[in-house]
Image (cartoon, rainbow, N blue to C red; front, side):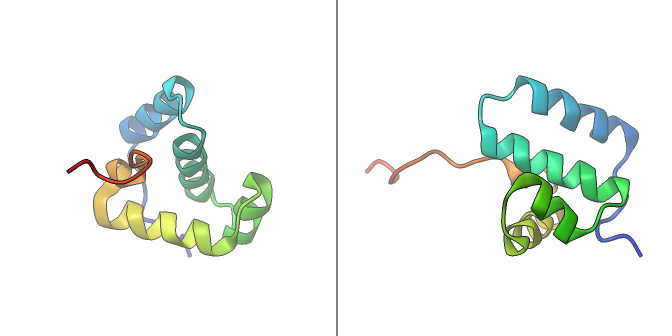
Length: 82
């Protein structure tokens, strides 16, 4: 049983392109994790490959299902300006 909903070919290609163009390492890791899960890898295998916790991969799956690929974008560092 797949862990995430199927991702269309165009969205997968856009994710791969974003991985190569982004300057944020964490954003690239999140997108890579989603592509690995789409390919059929298990959560524990993805976490082991990307050197992160399984709970982090679970959070990323949740963000992807709620907001799509835009939910995996990193927020700016620090507090919001007043």
